[in-house]
Image 1 (tube, rainbow, N blue to C red):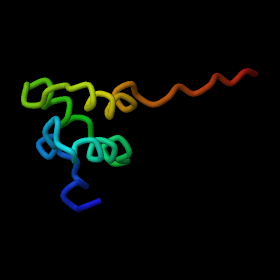
Image 2 (cartoon, one colour; image 1 turned 60 degrees about the horizontal axis):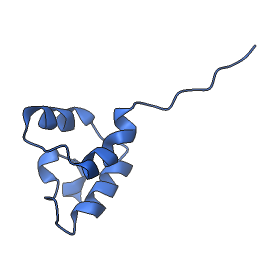
Image 3 (cartoon, helix red, strand yellow; image 1 turned 180 degrees about the vertical axis):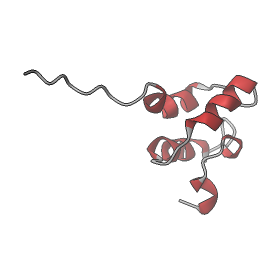
Image 4 (cartoon, rainbow, N blue to C red; image 1 turned 90 degrees about the horizontal axis):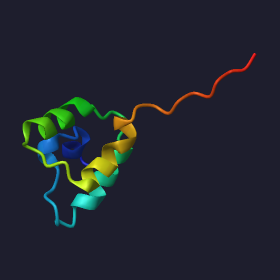
Length: 73
């Protein structure tokens, strides 16, 4: 992972069809320090197309943390 990728900025996402896009998205999906706000703002502003591969990489975080199982007394 390079230092340039560590910030995970939406403008750094390789364009669709480029060979480096899929590995980049996989790294994005695994990133522990990912701030979703810039990604959501970019999609909302129309500067980033909500492509299926991008949404798949962000889906787990968009849905929030997994629910905790109930504790039965």
